[in-house]
Image (tube, rainbow, N blue to C red; front, side):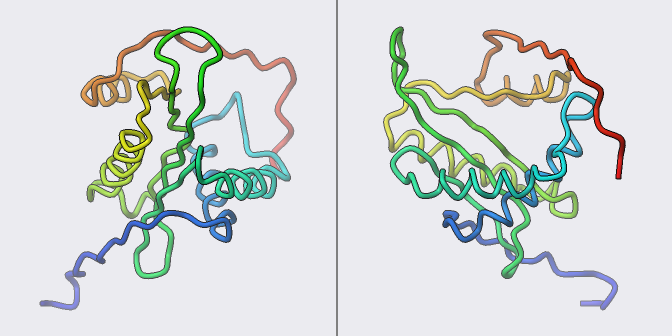
Length: 168
């Protein structure tokens, strides 16, 4: 194989453990920076706070799980989901896709789809009746979620009440 043609790296998928929280928080920060301006930004301590929260979630193995895509030892994507029981209404057992991110260099290779598949399989094993996700309101994303069998049940509107801090 010519040196100029790189062989695709093999990607492994693993269940995240609490010690991976800083890596997931780093990817969360990239996700927020790509997806959320101008209404939300990671903030000065956002990555650290995210790592603490994800670590706590990973310790709750009955309700939370994250799958991580690894190229060698480098985390290149993750999906984070959790479950809860609704206090009223049906279906009662619900799951949420909280975060789903693949590093730009690894997009278009099926990494995101594999992460999604692992999470959905976990929801099925947990006997979750409904899965929810909040996603950016864009036609391509709407199409992608609909192709996965999701339907729009509500829209979330946001209004920032304070000015964002100036960039560093």
